[in-house]
Length: 347
Figure 1 (tube, rainbow, N blue to C red):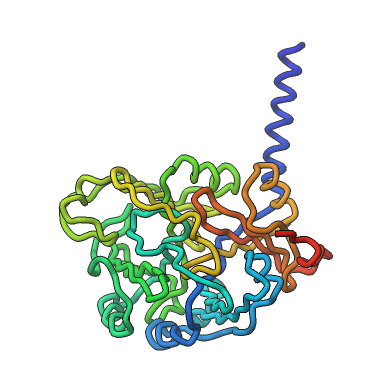
Figure 2 (cartoon, rainbow, N blue to C red):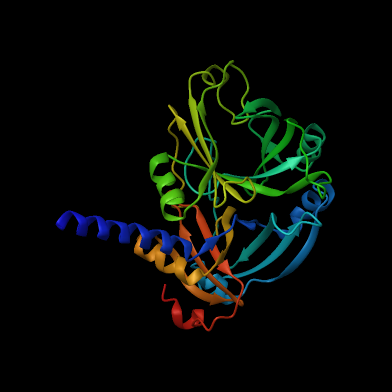
């Protein structure tokens, strides 16, 4: 009888865990929030080079600034750019004033861990785009490089703006890219990379806590020595294995998170600098259904919050820190009667 009782308790526990996981639904990230010095500096990139459109602009509310931990004298404004015709994959630029800033990933190499490394955008003609961006003062640590990645053959170039915005521009070679009807020069964003020191810990967070699933996984070094998209020394590309997982709530590559670890290279750790108002990619924003259940779930797992679930600008929002410092915002667009940030936040 005791064994039957223990089995029954175990079954109930498993069932409750499954039910709890089903009480909320996270979608792939909708947009990335990037801190820059001047919003106006990016019109040439998004409008002229990417052929996107400016869709929204305004002042950042004091409630949002406080949620991000800003001092009372801080002010900010924002500008949203999007690939016209798409409903996701936009970039929200934010410009702060009244606060001291440094870079989130100051003087960093690709193998330095912490925060959000890049966002991914597809390109139609990568060589032509590279020439345009070099003329604007953007730089990269390696040339446009072609390589095989899992089942894909791509050309890729990871370029960095003067404010530390890193973008992996990717031109598909094989198989032929399809179902991107709104892409002119550059597509919407679709993936974002984090460099991690401990893959086991990061996988546990995304898979066991958030319930993300694997879209792609790969581990290996290059077959031949030479240039790499990650700017590695040419004679080390065949010696240093790179471990990669692409994760998404529904195992797709649309608003996915890519985890990358270098086995054999150890660099700086920028986890503590990867926060606003510093310059760089600061937040990935994930839409959620039943966000209150997700909030309770994250509390149960003792996840670190930048700010708890609160009503900000008409959205229920909370921001958490991934294990190596990346900020993830979960939001639900509804007025639910949550307390105002002025009474809820105490930081």
